[in-house]
Length: 451
Ligand code: NDP
Image (cartoon, rainbow, N blue to C red; front, side, top):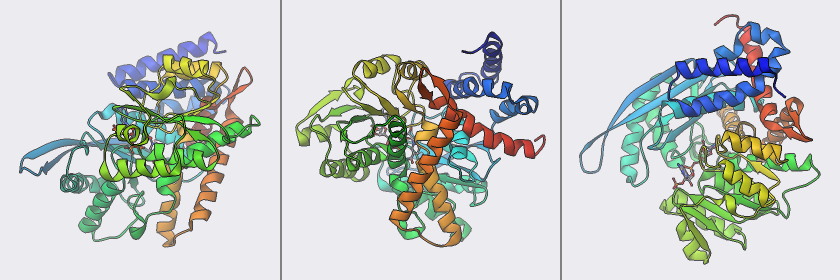
């Protein structure tokens, strides 16, 4: 139970964050969650409080914003905005994905970059944190337009990244195609073949398991939470939101472990398939989303199941939920529906998909809640392994990498448990992830003195 002193510290802290970063609501939300977890811990470990580590951690090392001009297929000039928020290189080179989506603002990248600090720390690998991207919308663009945009974007970003400085990867709207164009332009302009991006294709330095890593890792994390409760994914009914990279490979691993996936979604609605997604149906989703770039409704049309237009999947009965689309996609009402329908565990595949009051409700009601910075850290972990393979100029095999990924997710789970608080007998993994992620970065910062 937080004391009055704790509450007033958090209030003052957040007032200051809001005054300095007005209108950045997602950033406020991400910081608030961390401060709520970490402040009670640093009260008992005053070296962090005295050195103002938390106050320092919420200021990014630097923010880069730039203009990206490119020519569309009709010869018109198009103007987008590019961003890179280099949040912290306390424990390694900046590392984090690029997102191309029309909704993004500086707020988006500050929240994602801040989350990345703790996530990368939890992976046990030496990676700092950054996030970036653009308000460019790849949807509806031709391949040539995407190529010209990526080349223009990299022409500016190149000044700020490098294999020992900052190593971007993919995120929403940035998949294998975009990484190829970005890497190609970097190679052309520098005349160097270096591991400056991760998520590359296998032919030019990519790692096996990278595309699967976030989804597989999320399922491994949930499996650990369930094991700790003497249960497993096998036989569980799972709802998945999204139908992109994270959703696809979450579904694949659930199926491999003997669970049943009954939904996918995209920004137009949800497909509900009570008979369960099979590997064959999943291959259809992969081709639909990664190659044809179509809408998920086509799944319902092809396999004769229900399409819930404009709806999210949280009203569907399930044992486990995997929000894997985007931030704030699961509200308090959705959380209530999940609990009423018997949901026992949730793994956040997306970043910050669950609204704060929904997180509280789920934990208070005994749902094993795997927060994003722990549950979806598998992607960046395998990116870290891709960097290692590039530096060593070797390629590990698939089994080796999947075992490494599984072990990292187990270690992340153990660290979270070690620092978790107890919520009526259920481990509070949110506190566990925030504190465990904080300690490593904070100790490194203390070593550097005041900077
Ligand atoms: P993709 O672009 O492959 O897929 C995104 C999916 O989410 C699509 O189904 C998309 O639907 C849906 N979506 C995106 N924005 C919205 C929105 N505003 N409302 C409803 N649905 C939306 O992205 P990823 O799978 O890579 O990323 C999904 C989430 O996972 C993000 O939060 C990302 O930050 C996080 N993540 C990704 C990692 C990775 O390795 N890729 C690593 C760690 C976290 P539509 O096609 O209609 O846009």
